[in-house]
Length: 271
Image (cartoon, rainbow, N blue to C red):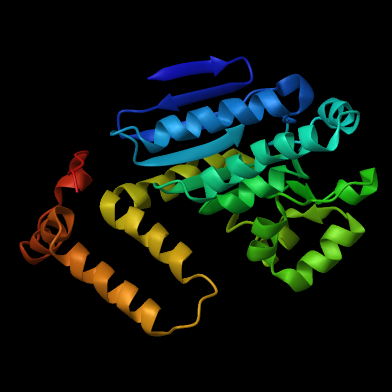
């Protein structure tokens, strides 16, 4: 099912339940303003609740993944009063939170340039693959701005020590360095990008959809927490619930019976 949400954003859901969301402001190098942020939020909210969706691939059309915030949008907002800027900034903050907490696996493919706010989108995705010639930059301070809304996600990905350097210098980050900084998980030559993306998708589709959802919840819950009684109780309760769930029962039975579980045949059990 191919859908044009607007001229700025496209999405498609294939028969396997793989949704592809494509930034499509090619003439602006996929820079985003309030309209694209709004459209992307609508698309993610729709896909999060779509019964057939198994995972989402985020990518950009044209030469670049995204040049970050649209400068005309930034200029217009600079002329607005403080409350208007708060409301506007919250649009991006809510989008990032929506992507970060998306219930199904998310995969981002980066090519060309990824600047400023684009790094927020990348760091909110579960898996990031980049063209080995891609370039990254936390460029905000060059414009007298700050990577504020994306900051928590970028710092989580690369760590505060590395963020101190790259947020303050606004220097270019090549693809190899981005891999070392954990901004991305994998590099691929451009001509092998589709093959690399498909390999990850195939791995995801072999796994229980419900278990993947629970894994994401587990990671969010346990991130940076002390392993105390609350965490122990939470994890014990989770595995107990999953073991007796429909997909938990199906997965264990399929393994013991040496057969393929239902979800691996294109089906999706309710759980």
